[in-house]
Image 1 (cartoon, rainbow, N blue to C red):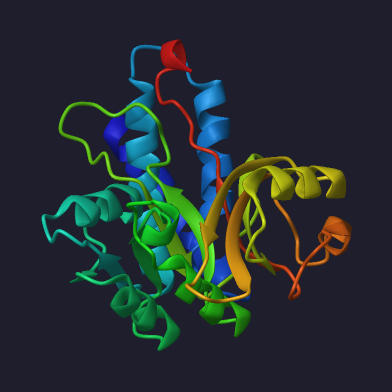
Image 2: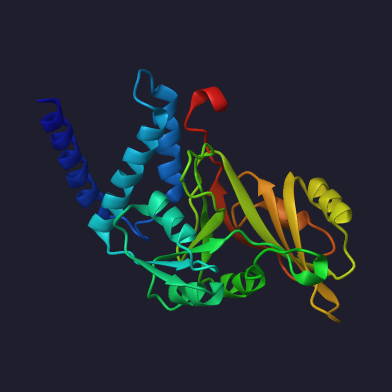
Length: 272
């Protein structure tokens, strides 16, 4: 029977995961590698099975592989406590992955920092009220913890763009204690400290001159402080030893590569 053959292959895969886990270093979360696998499968896919089914099936396979290696609790920041971010977490990290939900981002971040959670789901960062933004303001605190080598951005949710009716529509970042791994098509986040009066246009020009392709820039200007904090998205996977980092001018402190995430895919080729 076809179902029996599928089960046999899944058992073979689990055996391989067990052997690899016994020798590899680092945590079981590998979002970059998972994204690369899904992209490869979608590129090969043909026939009546919806591409979205491929994504869903393999997301659960990945979740089972992680659970097989280590029990991973995920801390979720859900500011409205309405279940939307928890649903996004389950969609990406597995329906049965244990979650602990918090209203505040600092609490969720603390769970990872203290080792009680293997990952945290945080609302996509925004800017402070001084800049006219309305989004969450947790990212300056994230910079402080990353500077201590404790947490890294490793993924962004949702991973596929097409959102059927009823699917979680929130945007979020995933943080973990292990660094991000490249997927082959990534966006990196770099944290900078510069003079408080820096403009986006000036910073964009500075980054371009250094060899980066900036995508977005978030500013945090604490009242009365001479230094502004910036969180910049740039194209590509930026390693810690990337020589372009040393070419960024006007810095008040060394740049921090906060993490990276795989660029989302469309699960239906017609809408790519």
